[in-house]
Image (tube, rainbow over all chains, first blue to last red; front, side):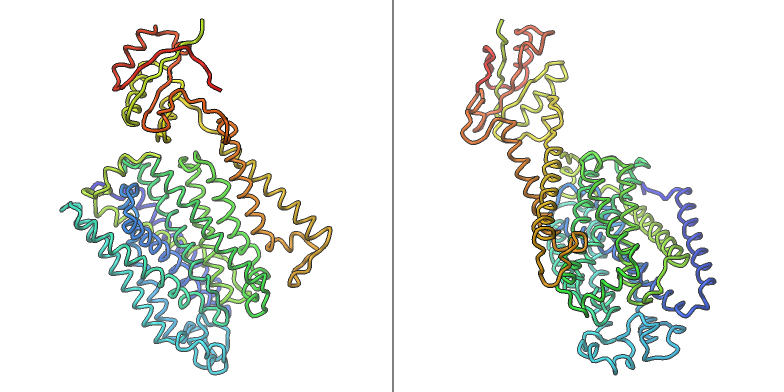
Length: 408
Length: 181
């Protein structure tokens, strides 16, 4: 088809994966003797597994949102959104493997749990029955925090995400051949249904996958907060891909107004995330109930640079840089902001996982950076590979003409 | 000699847009367009400069933010430290999370109102001000283009008339230019 991954791009991607794996292995060799090694390994897999899965899931959500609202302008970038969303298939497998290992090893990793019943070494303390036996707070959260509930719900979420992604993709390709409005209205209904399901699942899944790391603590805003982050990174990734494809001369119909609109989404979702970050923080800060505030106190005491750094990157940079309309059309500025946001939001996911699992011992070293690069390479390759499988410009979408003449 | 002005009337915004593009391509300078609603994309066509309202809004926002900070620093920290739930009332920085909402509100309030009032003042359209609209029907269903002869020195009046009549106008009128105020 029209888009092919160039030899140069392939070389770069495999180079990044290679460098990433090398750094990761160096990190492993450096740390293999340490007490926290196994926990650090699993935390890293969970961080990167979730971070990239969330990007794809955010894109899937955005796709459903465009269908449900019958949006016209975004039709020209629809294939890019589908491409990013396609990584749910890989991300899902990675997460399921990580969850599988954690379940088999009672919430830790084979090397981590030399003695059960101690808090050290666990990702999910509530998976270890010996800890739960002495912990009335976690007992109170049964049956939600039990292995069977975790797996029933996780498989439900994953199958729904899988089926909807497959369905959207299938109908999108079918529409190219058939035309008409039948598929369009089916997408409309399915998009709306997905939004309803996602509205629940985006919250409840993160309670199990991430919030339960700090099993004693809970936040009702948590799901929205994670969702804000995933939407923001998804828009950022879509922007990076559109800029890349345009630079190669593809997507001729995508004009400055489309870029401007994606830029507005990045700006808006950055604010959404920052707003939720602050809302969550301020309520706990103001109420100042010790068992709730400890979550933030711990992060601010032991990880001040990453905690405030990622907040500043994710809030201040998009706010100041993307405020003017011209900046939202300038590919150099956008590239800078997008990369900053990706790094910042990775820091956000790092902050969600590491303080809960590694306590005060978490650092960012070869292991973290290496695994991030390796995942980023695989993600990019898979997404670009999906883009080669279908024409970049959809045909026969009822709003295609509107999108081609998008002008703001 | 008093300035003469040609008013060309259209009954559709798309037709006016096409006409404007054609006239501008031929070198005619269009001073202004009057319409019942904003016509998307007309500004760059007739060469209206980019609005500076955004800058004004930003400055009002900064003003609001500064006022809020100065205000609550004086009220809540310096003059009469308020003990609310044991929050650190002796230090602005440590107590700042409590003040973020009010800072936000003041910024938005000033930016929005400042922008709206500046807009009305600059356009001379504050409530009660006389309208300076050459054709009252442009507030209903007509679209009017204003072309001044003094700004089109390289065309004669009849040449301009001929050019304008080539676009799909429904009425054309030439008269002395008066600023209605």
